[in-house]
Structure formats: structure tokens, C-alpha cells
Amino acid sequence: MMAIALVMIVVIPMGSVFVLLSAFMGWCNVSTRLIRQTIYMELLPNRFMGRVLSFFRSIGTCMRLLILALFTLMLDSTSASVGYLVLAGLLISATLGIVFSMRMLMQQVDTPDVVADQGTVKH
Image (cartoon, rainbow, N blue to C red; front, side, top):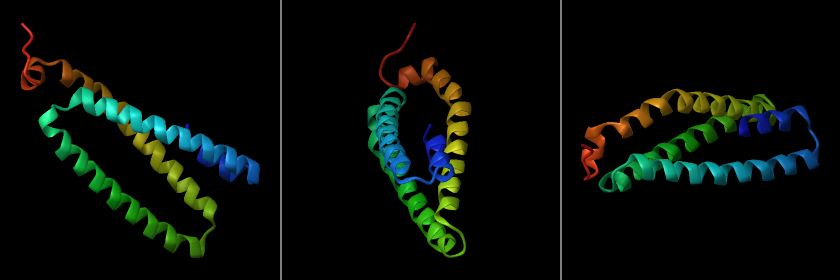
């Protein structure tokens, strides 16, 4: 939905649409943070939580720096709308990665090895 909102910002260049869709993307951002935290709590044992979260935060910071550098260089030769379209493409590729990997992750949670790793064993 965020990718669609980014494309709509480019397609409909009006200030009111920009403000409305920016508020919508902010709501989506909060929702994805809550969903991500819930998934972490479901999939990760407590002893790995801090390490995994710091790893993903560092990856996210590096991605932000690279995207900021790319957009800074790109803005001179293209318009800002190209940046929105690049972000929409990144969101779509991330969504596809989540859709294809989620089944595998959820199957791993149901296996006895992972449950035994969390301290309880199913018999």
C-alpha cells in the first residue's frame, strides 16, 4: 500500500494529495513497525533478540545512507519523482521477499527443534 501511495504522489502532483498520502504512509510505517516487532517476538528466542535487532538496525542505517547518497546524486540529473518511483520499486521487492519467505519462517517455528530451543518440547 505504501508503494501505491508513492506512485500516486508522482501521478497526482497536488499539494493536498501529497499531504494526505504522506499521512497515510506514516500510518503504514507505524503499522509495519508493530507487525515487525510481533514477528520478532514470535520467531526469535529471547537470548538472541538484542543481537538480531541490532544487526537489522545497522543494516537499515547502511541502507538509508546508501539511498540518501543515491538520491542526492540522482536529484541533479532527474526530478524528485524518480526518487519516489525508486522507493516504490524497493518497497515492492521487499514485499515480494517477505511473501516468499514468510511460509518458510512460519514452518520453522512449528518444528520441534525450534520449540526445544525455546525451552519447551512438544511430544
